[in-house]
Length: 134
Image (cartoon, rainbow, N blue to C red; front, top):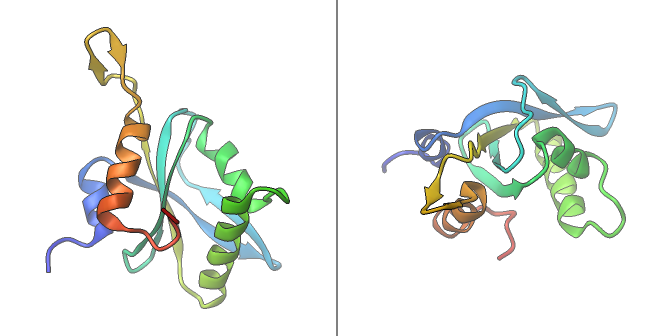
C-alpha cells in the first residue's frame, strides 16, 4: 500500500523530537531534542504511524506545545487537541511529536520563503489528519 504517513513526513525531513504523556492525569510533553528554532512545522503521530495533526508555529516548539498542555479558555484548537491527545493516551496509545524546522534557506529571488507556512496546507490536504478541521 505504499509508505505510512509518518515515513512520508520523515522522507521530507521531519524528525521525532518527543512525545506526549499523562502525568497524574495532566498532559505533558517531553522533548528529546533541543528545539530552539522558530518557524517550525510539527505533527502529532500515533505509535502506529497515523498522523493526527499538523501545525505550524513562528514560536519555538516548546512554547507552542505549552498551549496544548495548558490551553486558555478561548483557544479552541488547543483545547480540542488537548482532549484528543488525552483520549489516545488513556487508551494506552503513544502520541509522538515530529518536527521540521525551517532553516530560512529557501529563497525566491530576494525573498525568504516560510517553508512551514507553505508546506502546512499541502500536507493537510494530502494526508487529511483527523484533528485538522479544514
